[in-house]
Length: 317
Image (tube, rainbow, N blue to C red; front, top):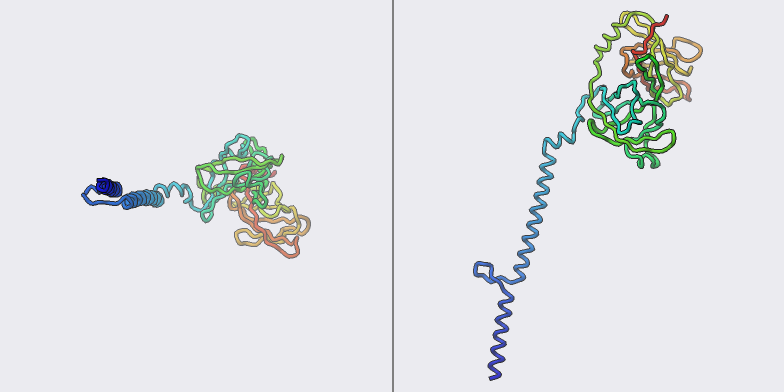
């Protein structure tokens, strides 16, 4: 009797193991637990692949979305040329000179944009296109100032510092750090916006041709070189039948010729500082010139810009 009971229990135990070890796939086909776990893992991996594929598709759609590309390339398609722009900052203590009415001059060349700003004083001695902590690092390329002469509505003028600032994009804030006379760097956000093309050459010529013949004194802005020499301001201009000739004096006697529009001009004096008579084709815009100096071991041609400010013209008695 005991033998039959043991055999019966053994049989029941084996049946239970078989039941626990198997499931049904819903179609009447036995499926092992290991197969079920494998199937679930495959489903999860497939789901992950689907999500990954979906994310990739979204990224691909974003990259190929014309509107998105347009947004990323916003205002980078300006034609090469010179524009007036609004220059705004996040702090009332950091701004362009009042004489500039919140404006700067944007130059676009080969897709690269640079804005020249004339500040309110000489209290800001360097700028850095980025964050202050980056400007403080060794080797950081700081923006050096130029000396600009600004003219106010009452006829007075003032020398201030100006800077040529790289512009990564328009109409959006970008980082521009500054350091003042106290030697501390500060972070700021600035915006360059609303570019307006400067009048074309014909308009500039017309404005010159409208000036009465005679001799005038005129303030000018000088930029370029190492800072060891400069052109004195004001200069004298002679106007005759729409043609303007400027007499300019260098602070050095070591310039033996100048190049303007590819033409070579020689000094009109033999003693003292070098003095030249050069043509002026436009006012209020930088004119590229080259001065050849013999002050060093061999002659060097150095690039400069001269800007003659028409609002400062006064007839010479």
